[in-house]
Length: 430
Image 1 (cartoon, rainbow, N blue to C red):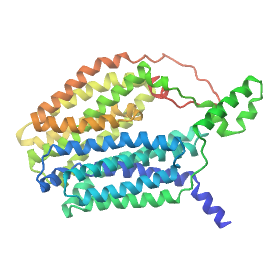
Image 2: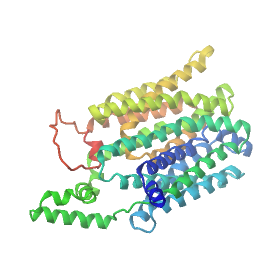
Image 3: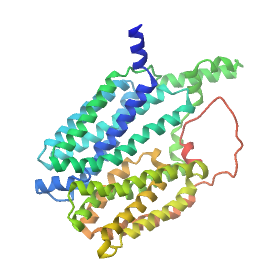
Image 4: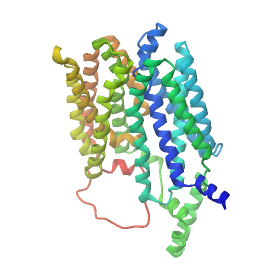
């Protein structure tokens, strides 16, 4: 009896969701904890500040490589989801240790690449695990995914200030914090017992079998009695969906917005250091002026997207991004420069939250790999004002493309069905 309860707990949805939530928080915390401290690490090594953008971008490159490779390995059944997550976390733990104790810029780059690679495994496999558990429960799946993604917001909120504060007590302490998070997450992943999952080939066979039953006039109750058959029969996906006009527009929009957003990560700490001679803890605190409004802007953007669609959000949201970044170019009054900069960061964070949240499901790893490098080199080459001018110009040039999105229908009658479909249409049809 006791063993049965333990097994039920290890297979339970709340445990899996809680562990994946922790993984989402850990992932973004590991990514963002170095934002306020990397300039000081490079100063200790007597290296160029141009490495700041490179280190942040290398993480994005690791995410791209890891997502593709790990997703392929799991799809082909070379590894299971649970042990793939365990291996990814073990690699992440080693990468954090390497970054903490390395005194060479190239070793730091390797550590950062491994961090992105392993963190992508935590993400990809964690979300796949949740999808397995909720394959026939679409009503709760959205709520669960929303809860999991709040871990991203919390990690984004806490990572930079915690990194900055802990660095003041010792260079290694921010990485001890990250390692502790990974260790707790690793214990949770070991506790989970992976539910049985259907392979891609199996899904195809089941869908073909279900289609044959329907053609032969089988009763619908036969299909509805099996939730897994119901889910696999209802969920279809074609690679052609990735190459429709609206799908490509979403990917382009995701790229340009994530590039403009992540260019702040290497340059804002440098800008604060140049203007006010701030230390890591002060930089981490000011970073909150951008991150907290970004979270609330994301909530508003999601609400607007659900009601009016991506075209509406971008038509009215991107001009707000352009205006807010243009205002960041203005130095502000000399007597109140900090108040001016903080206010502009609040406006920028909020406006980017509005426009970025609808396209976040498209995955922004490519933009994360480009934005920090471009921002870092522009800042060192032409300064803060002209760096922002370049990205404002990029948004202005891209803005007309938004009008190419397909207009949503004026009204769509509600139809109650027993099936549901999860695809890119959820993003591009609005």
